[in-house]
Image 1 (cartoon, one colour):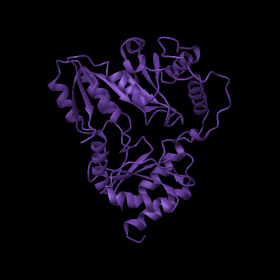
Image 2 (cartoon, rainbow, N blue to C red; image 1 turned 60 degrees about the horizontal axis):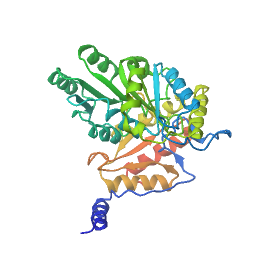
Image 3 (cartoon, rainbow, N blue to C red; image 1 turned 60 degrees about the vertical axis):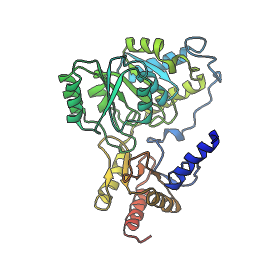
Image 4 (cartoon, rainbow, N blue to C red; image 1 turned 90 degrees about the horizontal axis):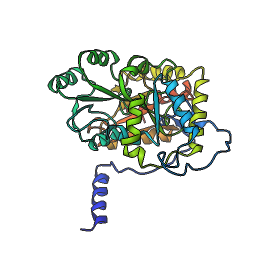
Length: 365
């Protein structure tokens, strides 16, 4: 069997369970799917007279004053010593997890962490073990089991598929009781709060924090927030950083512009949170909902790839862009609609979606 025949066989297996992924474009729908929580991706950036490319990796010819200034600004915003920019959140997670944990170390990670975290862990020389999602007694038992080792605990502030969050008080309790390095992915919480609870309560306890610019800031890219020592270590040992072309001056200018736009927002995330609560209260009697206190995401569980794709299709026909999350991305039986709330969504849109989902549940559509 040739390589292409093997690939076709794998694709056919996906197609048989209605889990084949494909690229689509949509226009004219009410957006309840994108990560553009604050609507900043809709902003039009003024023209900047900057070079189109960086010219190389940052250790060679690709370093320049604007990117260093942006890193200083990010460190200030995050109340930290240093920051190091990566091309994406995926690259940042690969960059820190492939080099910070050392051979002989132990990595303990929540079983629902993002694929980029899992891939970074695979590149590490450390041994790794998962613990049950947000199960702090399970994590504690593993901290006790490997108490003599150098341990790295990897978590997300807000989980991208469920929308729930870590328990800040539990992490603080465990950090006081046990010795471990905390690595935290804040992709879905960074920028949602003027007084960020994860930064305020856990920022000083974390060895490294990954913040991304593709959600609340409405652009793309990421940074690792850390101490100067950790930053210097990443510059010297993080292969995704060392061997990548530096972000272009145009991209850095855009991130800086969006960061300043964000700093001037008054409402920030209040209206989106209000709409999320209204949706949750209306549909909790009808559906299994998965969410948390801090993020903008609600998972509305509709078991079965066929069924959840049908729901998504009906919503699309009625003007709502809500994407299905299929197995194997989530466990079989936990397929869901992933609904994201934004500051530009309206109460009328949310009420319309609530009404349609209730009709779908009652087989009236």
